[in-house]
Length: 151
Length: 309
Ligand SMILES: [Zn+2]
Image (cartoon, rainbow over all chains, first blue to last red; front, side, top):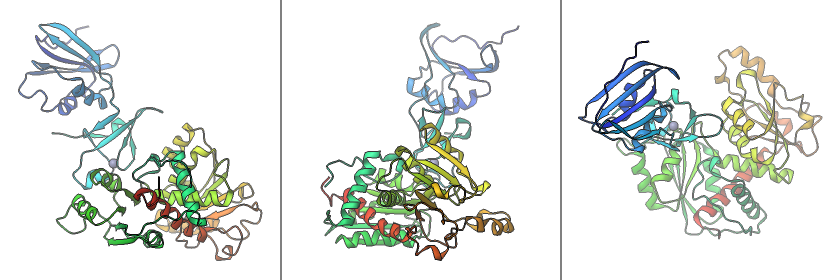
């Protein structure tokens, strides 16, 4: 099978195993974190595990664990590799944080986060599958139900 | 005086209250009710910010504060969180914070009380935020249940009426979950208890049975909690007319009730409990409203230090 590849980078961050089609959203969440650095995206690459995956490479920029965990909401399967001089320097999986702060809008139009200009907070519920509870209106959503904030 | 501590600065959501917090608060309310605890609220001011009108809840808080020797400031709004054009909700709160010792908030906007508690230094009491929480109602319901049954443990509780949109029955079922209840959810098929409440109860190992008529279980119940079925909830008015009769509690409905069975209702009642029931020893809804005052007195005085913690 012919494998599509994104070129190797010298220094920077590789975000791999993003669910197919989600790379653009990942970049939106990281918006500003890699401003001005070259970014390459591979989309819908064949993946033994997921069928299709996306991959994002950011040159000359090392994302922090915090930055990366922000993307857990839409890409919980992603892995992060920090590259230094073409070598893997560090590698880790994203982890869903306990609280997701100001990354997604609350879908409830009657929620205070939509009537006043205040940051959103979702508590990640651990028991009984992935759910995100709005700190304010206390409604529970699945990741797919949340709309990522842009900018 | 109960020798426990209350671990919350605010009353925003029943989710915040531990079983110990609830019991402590009910003990204080009971002491106020029987006269053994006399909080001193002289010189204290409660600001009652009712962005959405709710005369009963508002009067209940006013009565609670005034009977303890405290004062109230009352502001009535139109539902949204902005009072006048141009002033933000946050600014309103930060100003009123300077005039009072505790803030009670009622809004149609969900999460408004939580937000208030994050931006001001005073204790905040949620007096209802849209479809979300109404913790002081849940606490007065718990108080009424304990008062009439002598315990909160191992009770058989029927929740009757609109269980889909009824905020009070959601909070109450969650609040009772830790006391090993046996629930009967009695409602028309399209107004059943929402899945998220049921799955929450299942994960806590709480038993419940869903039914469409009261008669099947009335002889089992310790508490029958009745809520109103609103006409607006029905797409077809004929359907409403057909159904409403089967959820009206009258003397015939409760003929086989146990002696200790009490009927609760958050009020106002329309016609879901026949007036003939009022004189029955099972009727408890007006006492329940009175209990709201003791419960709110306990809340106001615990949070403002009007009672030694
Ligand atoms: Zn919300």
